[in-house]
Image: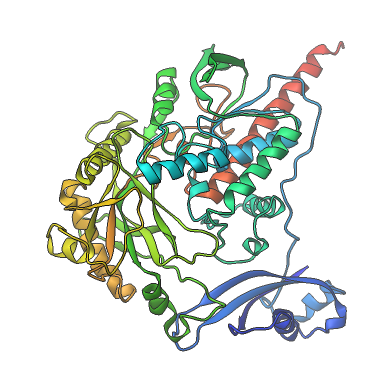
Length: 544
């Protein structure tokens, strides 16, 4: 298969135009083509007077090698078709591996182990995704928080109630495998080629449930409302895990535990610390969600093409350096979305963003964040970052009124250092259960408060309208990443044998794609270790 990149196409392109552009570039005939597909599609909006698509096209064509020889270097390249997760299934009679957490990391670790015939047991403290959706909706409607099942905890992880973004900066063939598996389990096929793919919070739960059903069909178990409470270690090796569920405490004998607990399970991290797992502090971020009219973002990004049906809702990704040397940036931008109540602790408020696949809501929102460094923690304990998160979320809870309402401030008030007394009505905040006008100096640390003020003005120079005085900021965004890293070696094991830190909660991922790829990577290490043990057992049973 040949890939032809950097093809310019108009927004109103017809279905066969990508192929025609590709064949023109390599001087080949349509009759020689056996199959083709668009492998990448992005929007070039640098010139607001000429917004267009940039395409890469993969073509299966006769005499590919001969065609490539005739082309100038860089015009086209040979590529392999995208494939899903490939695992060799073997007979396995050893202890069943346990996977703690069923977000992207745990989901793909369990799928990989199941396809290898190892029949994993998944422990997920939250509910299955359909019940979890009802629980999170009840919280948004009434302020009734379930600390064990919410936007952070439950099947699909935090990503199941987000925009479902599938962008990543890592270069790993497993990312292609993840995309292929998502499509095969019900995700829209366009995620295979869009430059910035997303599934949407309305589609992702169905995909997650379909993957779970395959894991179960292959002999795996998924136990919901089941919390990992302890690891039993003998001679430096895990021999069992303890858990609690609706029937009380229980124990599972195992020699392999994949820890894929996500970025918010501070209590589980504390248990691992007490068990002797090596961990260190890790930088994270703090800030707020900022909401603008989506129409403003569309116009700023696309100019006169803002309402073109081929474009959809516009995105942005902004970053700047603050005077104190910290970074400030936008994160998890949700076009046409809502600000979500993301609390998982009683007495704390934190926010996230989500949007449906159609991205057709009135507002755009994004996290507006400032770096938090380990030297800000005020303590050298590895878990000190969680204490900071808790303090800021408790401040937000009090500033919001103590009923899980979130404190909000208008961008115009923030910029001049003035408390917001009332909202203007120009931008309707989407956070539920509700919002309370406030002064963020009562919520955020001083460096973050000043960082937001500087960043808003800097981003206005990058995206016209960002400093809209009526834009609404909702606090506090404190869970963008994990404040701790569980150390692991080249075999992906902790200093505790058989303990495999994985994904965002271990400090090795920053989104759905990187966490899922890490889940596959860690599961491969578990499989390799098990295969090695089987080989050792075989050798010791032979007589020479």
